Every structure is written in structure tokens, then in C-alpha cells.
Length: 378
Image (cartoon, rainbow, N blue to C red):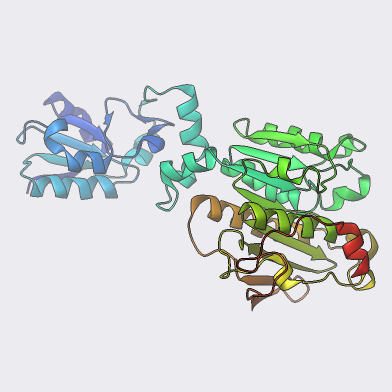
């Protein structure tokens, strides 16, 4: 048999015979350290060009991975290619490290090491990987609101490595916010929410650029706020801004991730009618007219369970990440409703309204309106 399973103790004798010692893990896995004496060649790269890395098919070769499985698989593939003296380290780098054997860091820049360590769990996902993580790094997201929904969403988007977060909110931190708006602290009561968010997120991930915009969103500034962004996350708490966001996103062809909470219930959807005219609905297809104020009180009037915005905000952040990566099935065309008291989710299919005032096929953009007056009339 040409393959031997060896312990870390046996590696020294193989190296004394001139063995080539190769760590077949990916670069990002080796960022935190690899067995001393090993050189890194990812498994796929090694098997694609074995002669480049192992010119002599009769020379001894020792392979190591994280736990031992991949190195054994690589050894079997090399055996099939004609290599005759192969060994795989049982227990891999994990056992090597647990036994206190010397580890070295590969020659990488500080920025590369940070990238590989920080996003290591993403990089292991085939659906993300290095390419997807770099895509997140190059993406721009507009978040409307740094409150109950924006807080958890911003935390996870920054942690996920979204490169640029533009956060628009004109409010200041109030003590009543702290029950659910986890971006903020007691020490920041009275400070602008966007400045508080910037400080918190900067401490979490210095590679995410947080652009703090302390403004009240309106028809005059909405397109400046949307300039260059890939996705919009709606954390607004009022109908005028929601209708304005919808109309602008339809006009500019930007996906809008919607969320809303009240008391013990919340809902999430994705409105992407601007890029899919006649196929997917917009917010106005769901709510052609706003409900009367007495049927839609805000959180200050009706109250809200503190953890509820956390659930809905994280669902919104999930949809944003999926849209940026182009993976999975988004909530476009679906409304996901959550009842915290019964711990139940319910999904409702949404249809495009062919007579929609904003997203109907062939209908020119009607222009921005007085959204406050429109919602009062509703």
C-alpha cells in the first residue's frame, strides 16, 4: 500500500528522509497558523497540477489538513496519479496543535491575515468563499434608520463584511430606545443615532466604512442617499418614508428590503419591482393606500416587545446579504409575518398589480409627491 496514516510523532522521521510536507488547507484556513515545516498548497491546486508541486513521483510526501480527512482524500488522488510514497497525518493540524507542536504563520500581509481570520466561517461556505466575501467587501448598502430594526441589521451587516454602510437618521438617542435599539448605550443618550451607530460598528469591524448621514429623509435628498448603493434596508417607522423609499427604488431599479414591527408582530419582504417590471410587486402593490392612523399606530403609541425588532432586523440583514451575494431565494413576491407570542411564521404570496401607480409596465415614473399629505389622507 502506498498510503500510510501517521501520527504527528512520525512526521520528523519522514522529513529526515527528505519528504515534502504539504498543508492542503485553503489559504484562509492557514492564516492563523500551520505546522512548522509544512508549505501551503490548497488541495484543489495540488491535485490540478501535481507535477508542479511534486516532481518526483517516488519521493516521500506527507500531507496534513485540519482533521485528517482532506489530506487522506488528497493522498488517494495522488496515489491514483502514480505517486508511490504517501502519508496523511491523523488528526491533522488540530492534533498537531493540541500536542503543543510548533506552529508558524504563513507569510501574508496583516490585511490578508485579518481578512482570512475575520471571515473564516464565511470562507468555508461554498456559496460565499473568497469571491463572495470580496463581493460583500465591495458592496454599498443604504440603511434608513438606526433604531429598532436598523440596530441588529447594522450589527450583522458590518460583521458580515459589507464594505460601505450609509446610515440615514435624523434622531438622537433617547433612554426609551435602549430597550431594543442595541447600537446605542446609556452613555450616548442625547447623541445623534448615526454617530452612535458609527462608533459601535467601527469598534466591531474597522474595515466597514460607516457613513453617518444625520438627515430627515425626504423627496429632496432621497436620490442622493440612494446614489451608488446596491441594496436598501428599510428601518423606517413611518408610512411617508416607506412610500418614498418604494417609489425611489422602483425608479432607480434598486432592491428594497422591507421590515415593520408593532407590539408582538413583525413582517419582512423584498420589493424588487424596479428590476423586474411586471413580474414582482412593489410596496404599493401590497398597500396601494396607507391605512388610517388609528389602525397603524407607531411603536411610541402601541409599544413593542424589545426582542421583536431583533428578529425582524436579522431577517432583513439575511435578505440583504443574500441579494448582495446572489444566492438563495429572496422574499421578493412573499410577505413573511412573525407572531412572537405564538412563535409562528406565516407566509403570504404577493402579486404584482398591473395597474400599480408606480411599477405598472410601461408607466412612466409619476414623480415624487407630498407623502405626508398622502398618508394623512389615507
